[in-house]
Image (cartoon, rainbow, N blue to C red; front, side, top):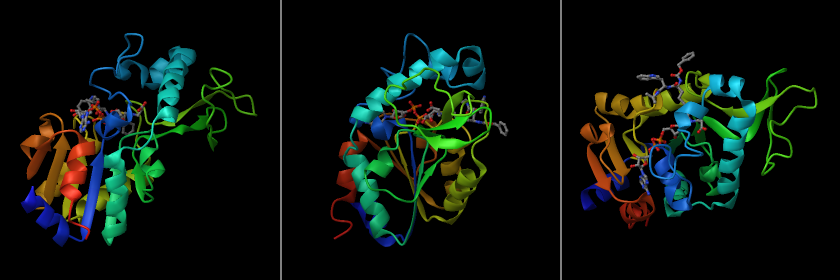
Length: 240
Ligand code: BV8
């Protein structure tokens, strides 16, 4: 741990990749861990354009359930350490696969939301994107003033990631000296390829997870434990 703290004191360019595990201690179930199921559906069955086309109501009921949990959730110590890191490092990019907005709520500003945000919707008729914070939505599925159906502004399986965000993420992976990978199972592409990019360039990858993942095979070091405990421990004494 001290060796990694020393490293964290000396680097200047840091990128972070977070997944559902960073929000687990805020009470939000992860995708592939316990509690991730909803009415016996797996996320991969609901987070697809086909599922939405087939049954927009069912998919919206899943998002409405997640909105209820996220609205009641507060950023945990891991989110807060990541917000403090952004103040400390001259070059810092936080890349997240999460759609819960908890990094913003913790004070992070330069956040790359690779998979969108649960508090934004997109009109299927005119493509307009807008904030939509009803918990639960007054109407399911919600409709636009133009009459079009509104979908969550998130990236579903089989859908391309937003180009600007993806470019920012790859640029950060190319430029960073160290990438911190927190709470991701490392199975969803293209996000999961970012740590490999860093290692291939000779950069350092530090993983924080409660279990072993494919990223553990290539990480410079993995710290196994809950992010809300491990991140404050890693950060202790670095930013003094
Ligand atoms: C695309 C938004 C192409 C919606 C999400 C075969 C091989 C390779 C790739 C594919 C393939 N078949 C299909 C694909 C592509 C597919 C993919 O990767 N599939 C996987 C399942 C194999 N990818 C896509 O479809 C992507 N699009 O490829 O498009 C394309 C290109 C051009 C034009 C058209 C098309 C889109 C992927 C995005 C999907 N959307 N979410 C929503 O959230 O509702 S993905 C979803 O999974 C979430 O974003 C989630 O964040 C993400 C990744 O999961 P994790 O965050 O890692 O969460 P998970 O539960 O898995 O793991 C939690 C981890 O935390 C665990 O390791 C656990 O141990 C740890 N943990 C738990 N508690 C703690 C903890 N760690 C620390 N502390 C704790 N307390």
